[in-house]
Image (cartoon, rainbow, N blue to C red; front, side):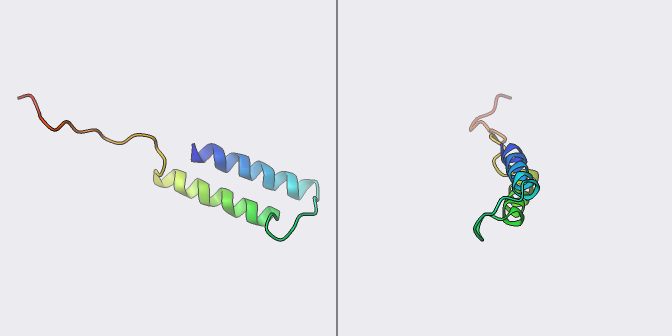
Length: 61
């Protein structure tokens, strides 16, 4: 999920940069790109993977 968020943020950063859209200081293409890199780093670290290993409280032997 975070990988898709990163892709969308990179696309928005590309559009802002390519179209030379004037934005305020918060939504510059560099800031949006850094948010995308943060989301990508979290994705690569395994945050938001969806499910983890499930253990049963009892085992059958």
